[in-house]
Length: 202
Image 1: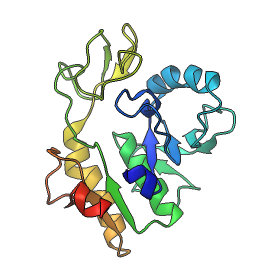
Image 2: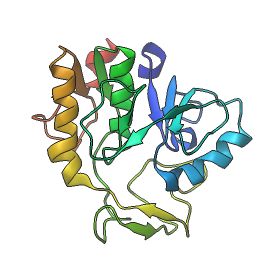
Image 3: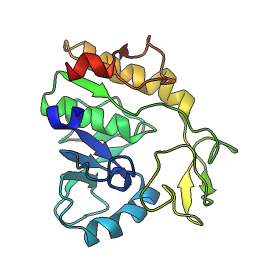
Image 4: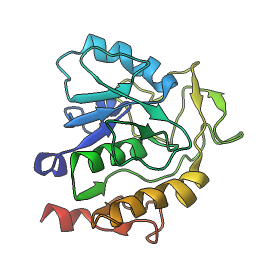
């Protein structure tokens, strides 16, 4: 219902959601090279799934907008110049939304938890996916991660302590809001304003 009412930003394998199989966001992004290797074949096979797409310039997906993705820079206010890889694609979408002029961003499904897979090693390093994954939504294809392929372990603490607060500060200094609607999210209320689905649906 939120997607029917508002412009939406999706990412990565959102097209594979079993709970919302027909959902197509207004904008879609993917910047992680391992995830892109998974997504690109599906995108090429399904041209009818056609949100406005954003990918790194090193991966010129047909019809997609190409981003200059940097590491270790301040959060970008000018996505046409660059965006910062902030440890989660949510940060990319917040930079895109800021550049597009949105004054409020509501976060849906940003629980900031990865219960098992990929958490049994050094954050930011690679792991090989198995056939189980309880850290993402249930997918139509049966597995969010493709078993046997490499992916990156999440870096939850730096995102929580540095990157998300930087996003909040960037939005707030321009009088804009980031509101987390995710029930049970591990992102504390001190990082982003907290809201409810009922509030926004009304």
